[in-house]
Structure formats: structure tokens, C-alpha cells
Length: 207
Ligand SMILES: [Zn+2]
Image (cartoon, rainbow, N blue to C red):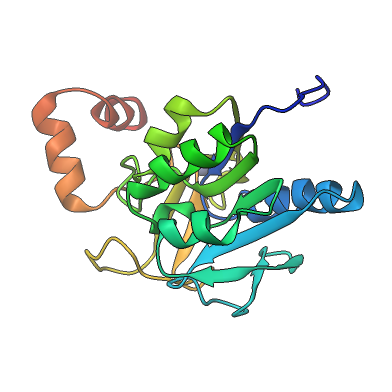
């Protein structure tokens, strides 16, 4: 995919999927390779994600890379003027300004690699990832393994009752599930039933 030689142009890569699908791990792998090639790399994560480590991005498998914590997307633009490669983790915690910032960085000739959750705990698209997917040159969808049945998992199941969109946590609060095993919250089930499509089929198949 990236073996094509790019000269003096920037682009956007998005790595997305459910929790525990290896997004941060893949981001770290790409950034490390760029560092080894002596490219100037700048790595960012939002203030909200302080799990494990304040100044590193960390995968669930404990890979780490030094990163800067920023308050908003514009801080990324300001702090990556020198960089050739810009990495952004937990991108779902930024607002839609991230889209503008990533476009600007790519237009400046930088390689921009963004990792984030593409769906929230309700199974709905998690902005600004869908918008980034639309403008990205390269997209990688990572899959976890469903903890219930072992199939590839595309959903993040929240194990506790809470309607806030963001609760930072790991395996104590979330687990990866496939389409069949994912149990959306009650309000989502009702919406799906009313529209007469989608997950109702699953219930018919399984019951
Ligand atoms: Zn499953």
C-alpha cells in the first residue's frame, strides 16, 4: 500500500476499529518505522486520554511512544510545523476541527496518521472519524476478536450502564464483540426496531 514513492506531497492515513483491535499498536509501528528512517515525527493525543501514561501513547499490549498531550486540534497544527510525519491517537476525542487540521497538515506536504474508534458504545459512527475516512488517502480497519464467540469483532461493548458517550477505561468497562454478539443499549434497540431494519434481522435469525 505505502510502497509507492511519494515525493513532496502529503496524505492522510486512518487506522480505525473497535477497542482492543490494535489501533495504537499499528500507529506506533508506523511511527517507529518513520523514526528509524530519520523522518521528523510528532505524536499527539488529547488531554482526555490519560490512561496508562501522560506523555506517551500506549497500546493495550504496552507498546509506547513519546507523545504530546494537547487540548484541541489546533494545538496539533501549531506544534507540528517542523514535522514530516504527524501521528494522532484517540482521534475520536477531538472535535470536527481535527478534520480541518489534518487537511491543512496534509496540504503542507506532511504524512498524517490518525488512529481512533470509528463507532461509539451504541454502535454509531464516532465523529470526527467518519469525516476523516471520507478524505483520507489510506484506510486501515483493524478488528479485535469477539470475546463471546471468537469471530472478528467490529463493535465495542460497554459492560456497565451509563449513557455518557465517553467513559475512559479499558477491559474493566469494555469488551470487543462481533455484529451477532453486540448488544446495543435499549434506546438503540428501539430505534432499530422502529425503522424495521438492521439488527432486528439478527434477532429473527437467532430466535
Ligand atoms: Zn461474537
